[in-house]
Length: 125
Image 1 (tube, rainbow, N blue to C red):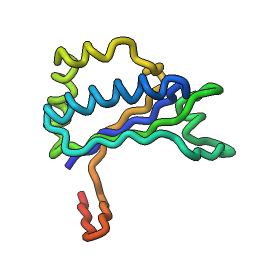
Image 2 (tube, one colour; image 1 turned 90 degrees about the vertical axis):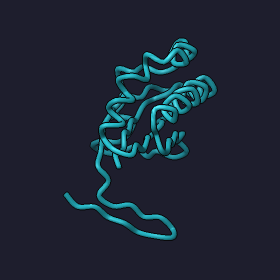
Image 3 (cartoon, helix red, strand yellow; image 1 turned 135 degrees about the vertical axis):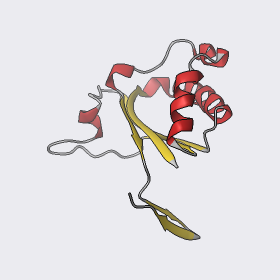
Image 4 (tube, helix red, strand yellow; image 1 turned 60 degrees about the vertical axis):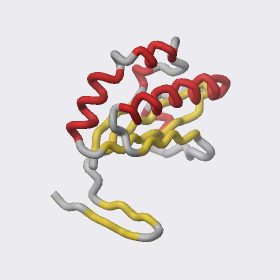
């Protein structure tokens, strides 16, 4: 399993445009092998003394934080999908992005612990 994550600031008044963009992205990602996709809109994000989500993405007044992750079966599938997804004609339907991508934090991760109500699993490298 491989997890791609990102954190981004989204103008609060562009929430619906963001949901549209994320929905199209999710559809394409699913077709390229994504197992699960989560988009999470800020409800409470406390300000930290040294660092926090807002500082990390240089959030401006009126922007909300979105934390997202996509679960792929493996790193190779995720890498291949990221390379090929942006060539998919559906991605052109997104139009203008409602975010400033230069302030996005991206990462790819190997899960080391997963808790689910019915089971717990871990993986060690």
